[in-house]
Image 1 (cartoon, rainbow, N blue to C red):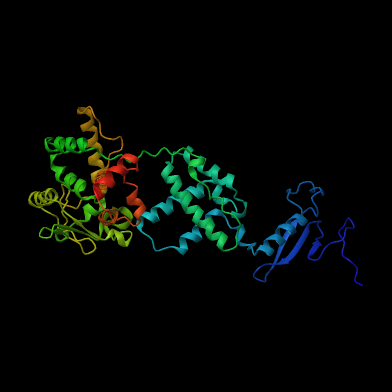
Image 2 (image 1 turned 90 degrees about the vertical axis):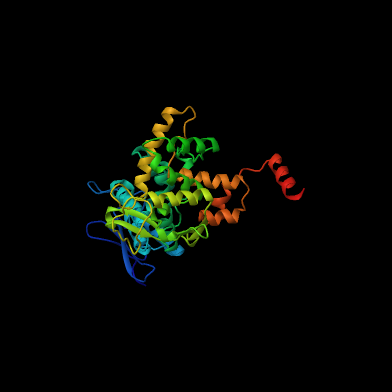
Length: 398
C-alpha cells in the first residue's frame, strides 16, 4: 500500500493536492476541455493563517469545492475569468454587421467600461449589487436614464451569452433599471389640435420660420421619421396616386465620410404613405420653391427635396436646431406653450395619436407608421373606459 502524501504540518493531502518547497499549496485538475489546470493558495484549509508578507486568499480546499461545483455544472473555469470588457468585446465581434448608430453606441459603452472599475472585473465576480452600483455611477456622471438603460440592455445580452457558453450561472444585469434610478425621461406629449393650428399659423406669418412651414405640414400629415423626410427625392413622390415611397433614409456622420443612405431598420419601415390634399399641395410648393440643388449623389440617390442654404440635402441635425429656435420664439409670444420637449419626432407622435383617436384600424396605422410591432401602435390608442366602450359599441352596432 502506497504511503499517503502529507504537507509540512503532517496533514494528509488529497488527490491532486501538493505542497511546493516554499510552502504554497497547489491543486491540479482537468478542465471541461480535458486540459490540466492549476490553482494555488498559501492555506490548505480556512483556519490556516496566511504567511506574513503574502497576499491573503481563500484556502485551497475552498477553491477545490468551487472548481468541483463548476465542473459538475459544466461551467468553464477559464471563461469565467474574462473581464467584463473582454466579454463585451467578444459580444461585439459576434455581431459585427450593425448600423453606424449602433457602432457609435457600442464605442461609448466600451469607453465607459474601460474607464469604470466594472470593466476590469472578472465576470464570475460581478453580482447584482455591482451592476446596480454601476448604474448609479453612470447617473452620477450625467448619463440619462435612457442611455443607461440602453447600455444595461447590452450588458444583459452579453452576460446572457456568457451563461449560454457555461461561463457563469446568473445574469447580474437582469433587473429593472427603474427599481434603482428614477426614470426622469420627459414623456412624449403630442400637440393638441389647437397647438397644431396655432404653430402653423405662427410659422406662416413669421419671416424666419415661414420657409419651414411646408415641411412641418408634411411631417404632421404623414408621420414620417425625420431621416425619412430628409431622404426623399423627386422620384419618391407619386402625385398621380397620391403616395410617398419610403424605402431609405438619409443620415450624416463624420466617420461615414459625411452623408450616407440606410435602409429601414426592419421590413416594416419600407412602405407607401398616402398623401392628403394638404400634404400634396405642400410637396408641390416645396418643388416649386426649391433652391438650386448641388449635384450631389449619395449611394446612388440624387435630386433630394429638402435642401439647406448651400443647396445640399438637409439632415436631422438641421431640423433639430431649427425646432429649438422655433419653440423658443413661439413660447415667448403664446400663453399656451408648446410641450417642453418638442422635436421633429413630436410631429410623428402627434400624427399617430390623431389617427388612433380618430379610430383608424390599428393594422393600417401600423403600416403607415412603419412600426415593426403592433404593440408600438396600440400604445397610441386611448385607454378604454366604460363611456368610450359604450360609444364604440353604439357607433359600430347601432
